[in-house]
Image (cartoon, one colour):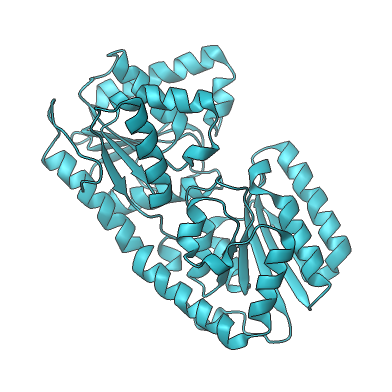
Length: 394
C-alpha cells in the first residue's frame, strides 16, 4: 500500500457470487475508491472485472459458510483476518454481512486487534428473520460496533429496539443508507421498454431458497395464465447443486404449463438483468413474511418503469410504498395484476411514479454520497474513546 488504509471491507460471499448484497458492496467500493484507499477481504476466489482495489482472498471457497464447515480452516481464516487488520491498520472497518461482523467483533473483544478500531456494520438481513442463536451472537458483538447501517427504516427500528432492550444504557449511532440499483440503471432507454398491448409480461428474480417462496411465484403464473395472454420471465440465482436441481424442476413445470411463453434462466449476470427488467410489465417479490430487509430487485425493476408488487416481506413494503400492491395469496396477486391489465392508464401512471421514486430515494448519488459523508466524518474526525452517539444522529 502506498498510504495507510482508510477503509477495509469484509463480506461473507465473494463478489463473484450472484446476489443483491454482493452487488451493493461492489457499488459502494467503486463509488468511494477514488476518495479513499480501500481494500476488501472476501472468502475465496471470485472474478473481478471490478472493483479495482486491493482484494484479499482467503480460501478456495466463495462462501464463508463453506469455510466454517471446516474448523481448522475457519480458525486459519480468523487468523488471516487478524493478520491483515494488524498489518494494514485501517482507519475504518466496514462489515457487510453477519459472520464477518461476528469475526471482527470477536477479534476486538479479545483485543487481538486494536480494540479502538472504528467498526461499521451494514445489516442487510432482517432482524425478524434470524433465530434466537444468531440474535444472541449478534447482540453479544454490539459493544464492539460503533455504527449500525440499515437500508430501510423498517429494519432499523427492529434493531434499535433489540439493542436498547439488551443494553438500555448503550448509545449507538444508527444510519439509514438506502440501496441503489447501480450505475447501469441510472439512465433509461424507453425504446427498449415492453410496450406491446397484445400480452402481459410478469417477472420474478432472486435466489432459490425456501424463504423466497418460489412455489407462490409458480402458483401466480399458472392461475394468471388461465385468465389472460401471459408471458413470464424468471431469473433465479443458485448457490449450490440442490437449488439448481429444484430450480430446473420448477422451470420444467412452468414450461409444461406455459410453453414458449415462459423464459427461465439461472445465475444471470448482473449486467444482463438490465434487459430482463426492460422485458417485463410487472415485477413480483414473493418472499415470506418479514424476511426481506430491503428487496433490491424491486428498485432495479422500478428503474425500468415497471409495476412492482410484494408480499408483506418486511422492508420491501417500504420500498414499494403502495399498500394496494402488497398481497399475500396467489389469488390476491392475480386480482391486483388484472386491475392494472384492464386499466392501461393506471398501469402507465404507476410505472412513471415508480421511476420518479427511484430517482428521488434510491439513486446512485444518494447511496454514494451518504457513504462518503459517513466515511469523511469518521476518517477526518475520528471517534475517540468515550464518544457518545445518540440513535438517529447523522
